[in-house]
Image (cartoon, rainbow, N blue to C red; front, side):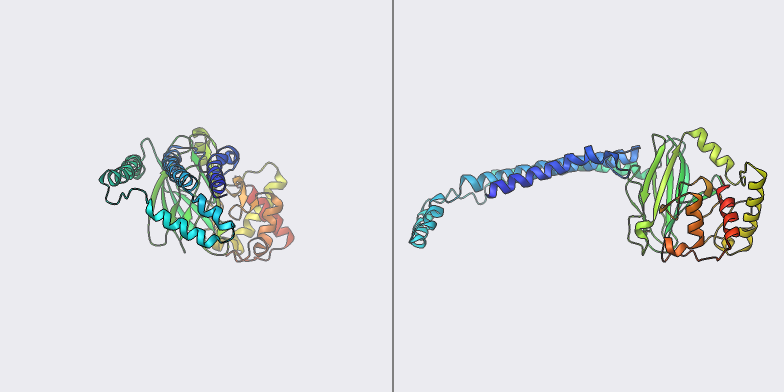
Length: 359
Ligand code: CUA
């Protein structure tokens, strides 16, 4: 009975170790499917440790199960069910005392073995750990691009000091180039985490943490805040959009160029929307490059039309959702710092047209 339970536990543990690598590969935040060198190093280190631990677990449990089965007290168990069992058990216990196994207390050979094996295993784990720790702490090779990440309740700000760009919740990066991140917080402790690119890093008020990552393939990499930071901790998501270098350059060049319109009617709506944005409460919290809106409490909206989501990853960025979000932020994200501005329907439509044109 006991050995069956153990067998089940061991099998279950092994299956758990294998199954995710098949099924979870498709999950957007599966961290053992690395998309760049940093996540790869960290994943390799984790797997090395995991396999060693599984080896130890299987060996120790195996010996334990074997011992339980091989040396179980057959006579006593059988006697227990017969009448007068207690007396029989006492007898068999007394007999057991007479043929005790050899006493091995203080065996130098055994002590050496169980000291040396863990020592060697620790060395096997320590060598790559130290090597990767130094590799990840050093400045990345190549031509890194710098991004300052600031955590806010509950959204992410990304500043590109060399490019003069500020954006929110969606970080655009060039493929194949390391990204040097400087991670800070504006209010409480957050944690920056894009599982396919790198492990977690705290965003702590009054402290600057550094890390780097690199995406080897173009694509969208999902991330989220990984430190409990208030009501919308779970809704503090982010995306890293890795673009081919030419597309990244194009985005950087176009950033802040102003609205993109395709018709005269659209141009008029966009112009009206810009005026609403610059004169109503919006400009107090948000910035849009090239306008009077210079607020810094909320995300910079200069390329809002390009983003795939709104409200830190909660809503898909569609005109309907944008209108819903602006019209009543609290119904989408209760407790969010964005207030209700109270726009008329036509003002709302114009602001939506304006924001959609910023791409
Ligand atoms: Cu920010 Cu959790």
